[in-house]
Image (cartoon, rainbow, N blue to C red):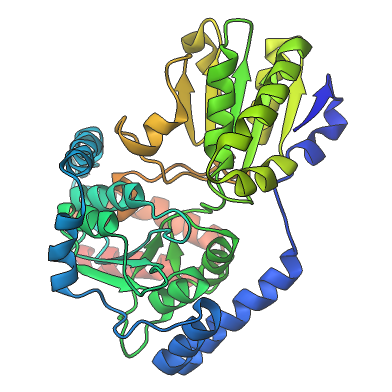
Length: 428
């Protein structure tokens, strides 16, 4: 990780730049995958799986027997942990269910807003080098609270064609039994367009690598609903003198091990701390099982040093990280300065790992700076709202001239006539 000392704000765009490997080629490859599945259905899908993964599962859909057998492959302690995490996620998300609203003007005009669950949702669960059964809980529990009647999971299988038993067990805990052994951009294509095997979904959810992120971005441009730009993971730690270096290093490494495109950033107030963190990372990364992945992620990561906490927070808000850890003396006060972040972790004893698994918040969060406008997954992400209005003759007469005046000012005569004809009929 390279250290930057008091960088001028003109450098912020380059310092906030995310990993962007071969983006033009990526765009072309993903577009071709999507087009192939859209036009060729199952035949194209199986051909793509074979060429990308090196094998095609005998059955793309996980059988009920495989789901039932999964529990027997897990330790009781892991099953208890999954259940505990699911309970905590449900407890945090249940109060988020939005309330229907109604307004009556007292003169014959009634307006309502009603929330409904999205009918069929597709949940993408990363499974390649790290089967993220925690993502099943984040999406599965939340969609259950929202009341979505149809939920499917797509997740990459292992080389033997099996799905990690923890993913299957977590899915069962969430009440999901439609699970497919497919990952990458081809999974997004199957969910977005449908094939002979897949029935298309109404909205796609979940994080993924750059192929998955790019596929979601492309199908979104075509009118397919997606949750957000949730791509390669990232974390920023803002630290002052009260921060504990071993904690900071652990938080940075915990995100670097997600994948080679992950990005970690430390923003601190002391050059000595920056160098201590830098040296400790060099030492500790060698002990990690995924050290090759960590090394690739760290190559595009950085340490920023500002003497002023205000400058630290200004840069943090400019960067808009997916995860923001405030390892500072008064985290609650500093938290009030946060304007853009996916999820914020307050104090030395709030590791990002807690949010990934069992604090209760959702770990499906906006990345690549989109937290300036996007929010993480919540119950409302799995719902849509419909507005209603009911006008009596009296109600329309009271606001009729307002409508006519506005419509004619916009040059929309037929709009005005739609009101005028009713008013004239009522008067006759």
